[in-house]
Image (tube, rainbow, N blue to C red; front, side, top):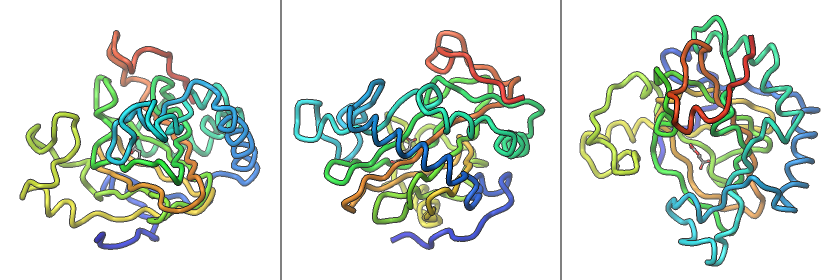
Length: 255
Ligand SMILES: O=C(O)CCC(=O)C(=O)O
């Protein structure tokens, strides 16, 4: 159904809206993070978001339904996973983000994302086509997320799909539904969807993508949980709108 798997490493972030950095996350960081993530998942340590909360296709309709309390995100990753925090704030990551954001100083947003996304085998939902800017309220829609594969990600366990270059397009509001998901049934959206690419990652690979890049993901059809850490960054001069969810916590400067 999807044109191709992206095993290449597009080096033109400005053109493509994403870049894959193979093996950027050191093994020591990944293993330390995995141990702690698994320990916290086994206790369902708060703050967490559950499958029933997201309301995505395939999610149980309430927390009381079978699988409704399946964890979908362990929130506040920076505060609870020291190895991930250290990596998320390190010089290599900072330098990459300065280039992708074309910024002199960058900050990590604690307000949202900043999580470990989980996809459990028995109750995992699909995420429809969207731009992450739907979550954010900043002066400018120019943020970049770092997606760290803590294990392998492929079409079987619900890896991401992206539409290269879509971050550069201006879309009319009518191309999206009420919840700001792209409307696949519209003729004008079909060519875009045909250009989608699978982003298959190996453990330790890191994907950087722009907050306006259209992306989606399927459910996990394997028998093993998929775990991904996600952090979002912005130019220090690009400020969250006061009173919005984006403004609820101070961002962390990386310098
Ligand atoms: O289902 C997924 O893994 C994608 C999640 C995602 O794109 C999001 O939460 O913005």
